[in-house]
Amino acid sequence: MQKRKRRFLEKGQNLMMLRTLRLEKAKKAEQQKELTINNALTKCKLTSSEVVPDIDNLLKNNTIGNLVESLGHGNRNKIRANAADALAHIASGSSEHSNLIAKAGAVPRLIRLIQSTDLEVSEMGILCLGNLLHFAPNLRDFMITNGVVQKLISIIQAKSTCTLMLSHVTWVIRKLCISSPTSRPDNVDEIAQALNVLLYNPEDKILEDALMAVRNLAHENETIPMLLDLGVVPRIIYLLEHPNVLVQNAALQALINIASGSEEQIQELLNNNLLPHLSALMSKSDLDIRCHVLRILQNVADGNTFQRQAIMNAGLLHKILECLKGEAIPLKSAAALTISTLVIDKDKNLLYYLMRQGVIPELCNLLLSQETDIIYNVLDMLSTMLDVDPSFLAEVSGIIEWSGALNNIRMLQGNEQEEIAVVARKIISNYFPDKPDIATKF
Image 1 (cartoon, rainbow, N blue to C red):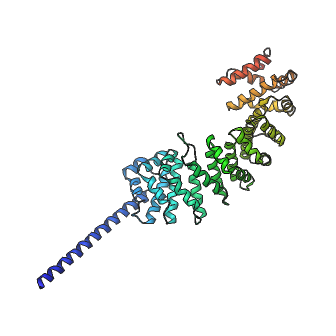
Image 2 (cartoon, rainbow, N blue to C red):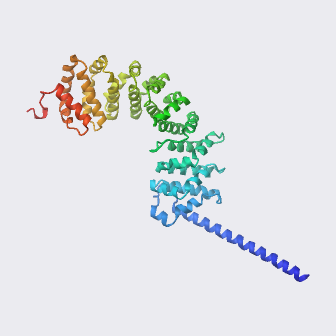
Image 3 (cartoon, rainbow, N blue to C red):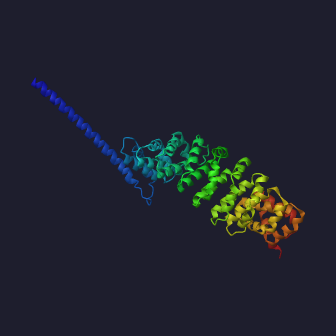
């Protein structure tokens, strides 16, 4: 009886010792794992001044593999957050760095981090995904396939989401909306509905990123009707009055792309009182703002005769001419392109008005531009003014000669851009066939 009892106790002690050994072994393995992860984190210590490790170094030490492994559920939240942060830093190295991270299996794990109850883990996961998208846009479709859109939208819809987290999510959505060479996002309607919510957020950065996301979506003409149906246009036009110039700028860029659509879509913008808002912005001193306004007006003018007339009726022609006569070359160029679109109907009254406003010398100065579309449109306008009415001919040709532009037009006859050369040759042969080259006149 005693022997049996002794054997039973010895067996129990052996089991306890075995269990203890196993626990100690597991603990050592966990410590070794954490040491490996910490070493990987140390190699990528995140200070903005440090250079991202080169690819060979990362592969040699399996740094990325260890960091991706540490994103898993079996690790403490602090390690998971630090690993995501380190990967975000590595992703900023180059497209190659970002694709290497994705190849190591990081994307599905990072998407799972988004829904972590730990705020820091979720935040670092979102920021890492954003960096991957920023430096490797080719990963967009892969992320969408892995369900990133639904995860991000659930954060937007949650009432408990803090402003900082919402700002990170909006930034990532902005990146997701950038046009892909292959296709637009499959769930673009879900994204657009989420953006329609974000456009009413009071935070400037969220508004800016949401507007830029709309701009990215509207880059594809087939998404413009959907955006119009959602009713985003009145809100975007309202945001043109926002006190933050970055928000105004983003709203204008969204409207540039929307105004590139059909005549019906342009009319939708006009029906929402776009032109009075643009007229107010033309008085701003900010160069980018005025250039963006001119690009919208150029797209509107590219619509139909009534839409071109609406620009005139809104008193915008005078402000466009002020830009043409200004000093800033980008502004002058944008104004010239807008005017060239406005005169497409060859209305004699409009052309006569432009001549009386001193447009021709300003246009001639732009023949020295390096931008081929500017040169072509200026030549086309000069040709139209010379051609539209015989009574204009003597005055227009005289101003061209007086401004010294005739030599420039002669030189453009040999321009490598055939369309420019054709218009230049037409002007010289039709209106200045017997005029000598001023440079060789003497």
